Image (tube, rainbow, N blue to C red):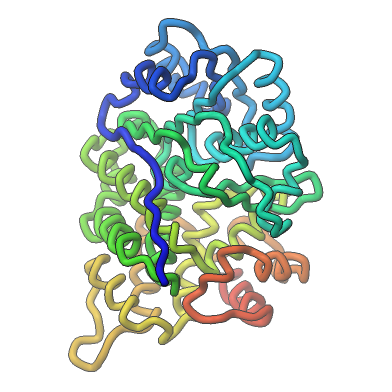
Amino acid sequence: MAVMNYLTRCHFDHGAIAQLPVLLRQSGISRPMLVTDRGVESAGLVARARATLKHPPAAIFADCPANPTEEAAEAAAGLYRESGCDGLIALGGGSPMDLAKAIGLLVTHGEKLADLGAAARGGRIIRPIPPLIAIPTTAGTGSEASIGAVLVLRDGRKEIFVSPFLIPTIALCDPELTLGLPPALTAATGMDAVAHCIESVLSPAIHPPAEAVALDGLNRAVNEGHLLRAFRDGTDRDARWHMMMASFEGALGFVKGLGAVHALSHSLGRLREFNLHHGTLNAILMPHVLRMHGGAAPEKMQRLANAMGVAGPGSTGVPNGSVVADAIDGLNRDLGIAPGLQSLGLPEAVSDETIGLCLADLAHLTNPRPWIAADYRALYRVAWPG
């Protein structure tokens, strides 16, 4: 039996940020904490959000790391309590949005984050977090509409937190906030959205509406060319609109689950000494994973090829993963993304610990075909040199 539940309320368009005061009132928030990072602040977006408000936020936490950490969540949760906050505004990419969700967990559950993560398998996220308005400033992560968050814990694990209680109360999506995004970050976050769309379609979970939405997002980003347009001209308002929609659709899609791309990128992303960008990892890993999937889910591979506007095999049958993989390779080249993990400074051999984290990752469970440790090890060997 398929059980399907579809997520959150979204306010979407150029200039939507102006609705923030009304949405705060509707959400019952009178003393918000604004969670962001220094890059968003220096880009002037914090000032832009504050300019819509009659009164300043009760607290601002702007020290979100590139990969949010347990330490940052605890520091921000302390500030939330001290300031008497009653809700959250997350302004930024996936990191501030995920950090805001972790803050919400700490102030409502009073437990260690390690006890609330997916690895604990305890289902201990049992009550709503404070109301959260998520305002993305990149087009990729989809955290503004997702049931999950990812955080690096003190022991170095990159832990996933999953619960319907983590879905933001409102997603406030204003493509104008992405107009100043640099080309490299546009590329990396855009390929994150593409990975969400592709892996959610390939997931064996049954959710046709989610699959259809993900295919539409993939069509916008790749076939209609909006990712390349946004990369080449960051001021292209139409391309930015469609890429933010593709990102939102990717998040709506991955309620079905993800796959090996994300299992490995989550595991590699926990390596603090490298501070790797999640979207860049996904972009590099994606074509290699698709080729290793081979003939798995051939009908879904055909749908992906159609949505991307790439030629299938004609009358001889449906494409295997290499058709879609070749298209992703070409897109990566056009976006200036290096073909191998070596370019990120990663070691030539993957550790047993990283492989173990892949096998324990939730995304591993919804691969289109089962993988074992040897598959992840082989994939890393192929993807390292590119």
